[in-house]
Image (cartoon, rainbow, N blue to C red):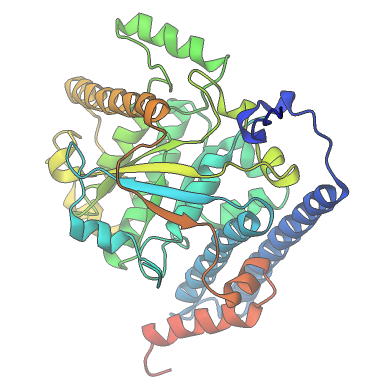
Length: 407
C-alpha cells in the first residue's frame, strides 16, 4: 500500500524536509543572478539616461516627454521581468473572477475590455509581485508600465531596487499620518494632474490593512476591534480607512471617471487561520521552487463619484486642480470619515466571507479566467532582462515624434 505525499505548497516552509537537488540549487542561483543583474542594468540605464537628459537636453520642450517615456519603458520592462521570473523559475497561473451580481459588479462589456483572450479562447511580499504581473494582462497592451505603489519608507534605501523605485515615482510612507499626509498629497496631486491633462493611465496600489496577517498583527487588529466595539475579521485584518479615503478625495476632482477596484487574493495551500508567510516567501517560491499552483483573484469595481461615499468635494478649489500640482484636499469632516469607515469595513467583511467561502468551494467564483504567467513575445524577454536597449530608444523616440510631428 502506498501513501501519497502531500504537495509541498500545502506544508509550512518549516515542515518541508526534502533537500534541494543540485538542479534546484542551480535554478535558485540562476534566479538570484538574473534578477539582480536585470535590476542593476535597469537602474544604471535610468541613472545615466537622466544625467544625459540633464546635461544635454535641459530646456528643450520635448525633454520632459523623453524622460517620462523612458521611465515608463523601464517600469514596463520591470513588470515583464516579474513575469519572466515566474515563467522560468516559479511557474503558476492567475485565476481571475469578476463580481457580476452583487455590490461592485462588472458588466460583460467591462470584463471584455479588461480581459484580452488569447487565440485559444519569512515575509511574504508576493501580493505586490502578482498584482503587478496582473496588470500585464489588462487591455491589449497591458498597463504594467503605469503602476504606482505605496511602500514602507525604509524600502527606499534597499540597494539598487530602492533608487529604481524612486525613479518609478513610487510613494514611500512612514506609516504615521502626521508625516505621511503631506507626502501622499503631493504625489497624488502630481499623478492626478498627469492623468487629467496628459491622458496618462494610472494604476495605484494601496493596501488598507497596512501589513500582513500574522501572529503579531492579529492581536493588534483584535485590540482595535474591541476598542471600536465591532467584531474582528477571521481571515484578514481590519482595514484602516484614512489613507484610502484621503487618496480617493485627492484624485477624484482631477479624474472624473476614477474607479476603485477591490481585489481579493487567495493562495492555495494556506489553511483557515493560517499565515501566508509560513507557506510562501519570495525565497521559497523562487529559490526553493515551491510557488503556489495558482493565485486566485476576485474583482469588484466601484465608480468613485457615484458608488463610494468619499464625502462632499464642493469646497475643492477648481483653480488648484487645473493650474498646479498643489494638493486639492480640504480637512475631511469627522461625520464623512465615519460614513466612509463603515462602508470600507463592510466591504472588508464581505471580502472576509468570500475567503471563508473559498475554503469550502476552493474557488472565489463559479466563473473565472485563467492566465499562465508567461510573456507574449520573445522581444519582451529581452526587455525584461534589460539587454534590448535599442527597443527603449525606439519606444521613447516614437513618443517624442507623436508629441512633435514636425521633428
